Length: 62
Image (cartoon, rainbow, N blue to C red; front, top):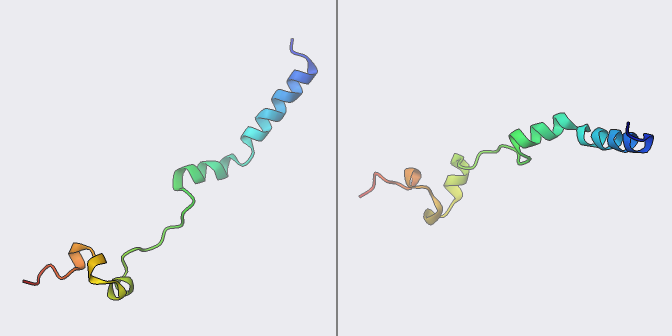
């Protein structure tokens, strides 16, 4: 049988490991960067022509 000290240390280790598990799982799944639109009409209107994506860069032009 393990000593009381070993049992206590193991319990503390597991408690620290399990702390915030739901938060840690969510961060692992979704990441920490919030979702935000990158190519909005306002951004594309203000961007220089060299930075626009080909689909909005006037591909229909000559």
